[in-house]
Length: 535
View 1 (tube, rainbow, N blue to C red):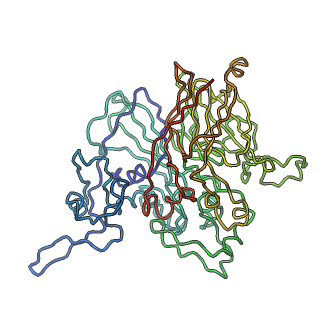
View 2 (spheres, rainbow, N blue to C red; view 1 turned 45 degrees about the vertical axis):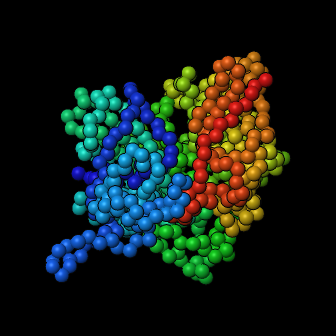
View 3 (cartoon, helix red, strand yellow; view 1 turned 90 degrees about the horizontal axis):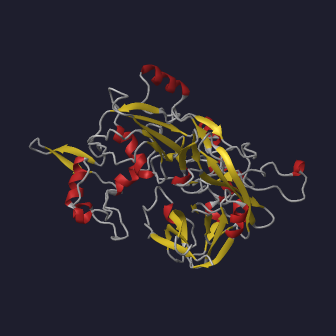
């Protein structure tokens, strides 16, 4: 029986994405037994009397990680419960007054960002075939595929907990021993949990399935055994390796190597604007489709049962989904046959919203206008019957060159918040830096919000709920919204988001760099709200 906790729990801890759940009843928490294997930082030695004792090996990460409440890291022995858990490889129990204070062993946190299953190994096709014949893998190292009945469950599953839960997140952190420069550049891994009713089965009620999203970039890099596409957060191919050398390939579960020399980066990446679609940000199940999404490209469609990748999905929209197309509109006035091949693509948000009243899925595609410093955005509402398009409207975001990441859906409006970010085009096009590295952030500047009427509104309603822009929202930085609504009494638009307060940082997600987020400099995160009065 495969160890469910050992193979899956690190992924569940590391991913940050929203879940898609199809069920006849609300999901409740599922207790999962943690592994009780000995911690790899513990060894045994025999003293003169022949008694075997546990000793802690030197481990750079065997300390208590810093948190906002306790910004300084601490010696493991300062918390006896954690020290004992470290020695025995068990999960510590915390008293109620300590819960939520974030005490954790840093080595455990790092394990949450290891590559899934056995997929950190580099093996030849011949070795792969031999192992499959001899008994196979718990997790296929090429595809991330696993499928088995979950038998080891603590507690009792409610009889009416029936349905399918999907989850997506970063799961494969590099290729051929070379780790990605940033965890958000990792390939997407989708998990599927099928909860069956007691009447449907005489064995386990939970079936587990997993698989990597086999995007164009994933397959290309698996074949070449090296990075072939630029990642959003700094992962990139190397150039002039005969001059500057091959990567060190320290292993997918070890610290990434530092940046290659500038000339190496530029030689391999100059003028390459086709960023790798990792399909690692979100998964949705709607209208008979299961889609793995990423914010700067179109989603990938997956088989709802096996999770095998079907391919890029246009979502029924009249757009070009050819590989290599960047979400940038054609240059005005230039004949189509003279347009650069990379232009003409679209990208779809990774965070579409579900309307609780209509049951519609509301998403949006976007493309930059290369000569205007603006962006075209198309909002589309889909019906759950066959993913049918119900209505669609296109608008322009003036003075916006970088797509918002998330949105708020209310009864009549779609609200977007635009952070104070600018991109250094020269650094990006020269190949010297990755896209996110080229983003400059003004943590003290005011930000903007754009509100648009939903495409399903009638003509009169669209006049009443006309588009508007708020240009003087106090300084803040956000990525994800929690929720939003229209106040029933005042009509005000109210939204809540997580983010950062005003600050002097010029780096975009800089604290997430290195091996894993927060390892070196945990950042203060806040919940804020925006209330817009509709006059």
